[in-house]
Image 1 (cartoon, helix red, strand yellow):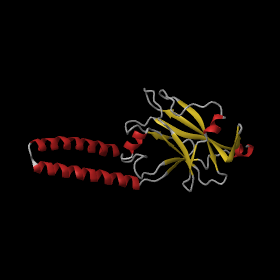
Image 2 (image 1 turned 135 degrees about the horizontal axis):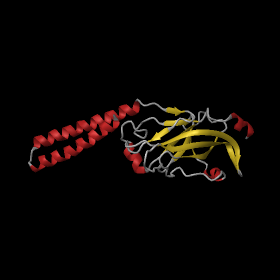
Image 3 (image 1 turned 90 degrees about the vertical axis):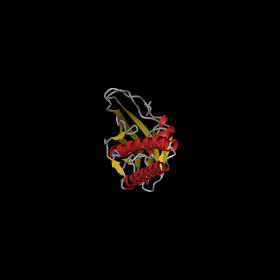
Image 4 (image 1 turned 180 degrees about the vertical axis):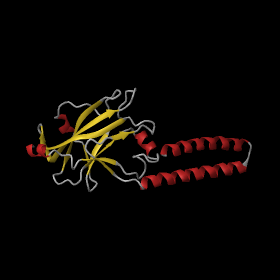
Length: 221
């Protein structure tokens, strides 16, 4: 539905530009007013639809192995990511956590039929119940075995698994992983796309980390 409204709005604006040009050349003030009124109505309708979709959205917690799709401007949703493992440890190599290291295994895969594609400019961070945000501990990650980059290109049906590390407080409540991808221009465009996760005021899809910690791994660490 969102893509239909977006395309309708763009086509309507293109037609409006043509009609305004005709009205201007023919000094037709009535046509100018009609076109401008229609454009204003179109903008208001789209803005209301955008706000309605965002304000009625709900935060989603994705379970273990449940994938999140990443869509390229509505046109394809072939790239996916899923959390396939979480473990806690106090140390990684020579690095000691202030609280606990959460080592999160993320599987990235493509279900494209022909093209080789990949994620773009991935930003992964953890948020907790108090909306505190935690970025990756890149120093601790360097002590892990060599990892693929998130932006690695994948052929049809290909996948890889990557471990990322977060240094979280011992008493952290409801940690959840947010993975976002795309350049700044992508986020700007998506901020006004109806039903897009990055649209204004829209709730996000998170990976739930609270029930994905291996108790045996926790006991060993």
